[in-house]
Image 1 (cartoon, one colour):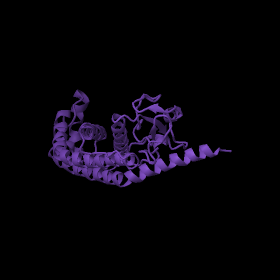
Image 2 (image 1 turned 180 degrees about the horizontal axis):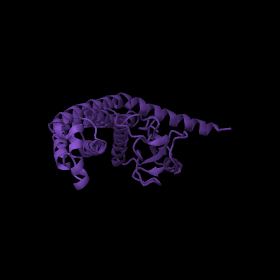
Image 3 (image 1 turned 60 degrees about the vertical axis):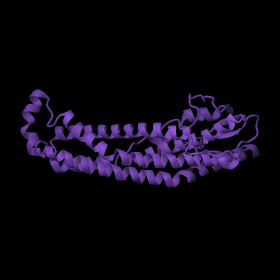
Image 4 (image 1 turned 90 degrees about the vertical axis):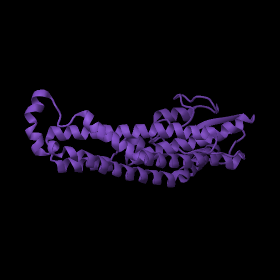
Length: 293
């Protein structure tokens, strides 16, 4: 039978998880929708630009090229040709992607900071240099990674269309499908994630939330109050072994490393873990610390 102490600890963890999920829910939904809208815009733009090669990419065009493909391993259009088209699409949508990502990450960063601010009385400032540096660095890297993954998906689709001699109509539909339904199955650990857009939103906003929480705790430490942290998980069957190992570790200094080598969650894309914090020596630092598992 579980002890009263363990039951209280489980209830505390559950509350932290629910608080984080509630704080991020609207932002995750918004960013997921924004990404879907932008991918649809990219799809239309790319297919429109690609249509200038429609004659070469039609079934008749592919069949007429079959002898050359077999003899020279040549493609209907070169990598350079379609990549140039894709780069034009990237430029067309770059500002909109940046706005969606930075807005979402900024809201999550603020929510994570506010979760600590409420209890510690240390105001989190989204306009601070650390916060702005985080948004600038992570936002730019994320746009690059998102577009690279999309380009890789296009490469796979075009290659398959040439091998199977799809009609232009089918190629267009397959490209639309690739953009509209870019899923990233991660197995039983990530059953809570349905699409690529949702994976990106949950991961990047979860990271921003934890960063905001950490920055607030770091502000308190800079004032001379030492903070400790402990890794939290949701405690269900889907928690990964690495996250369980982190949660089994004792309380660490704020800048300490968990067994996985991380200073804070998220340990991997879609990770549901979070941190609990307290003033060093056992006193709780926050009645509602930034968290989620």
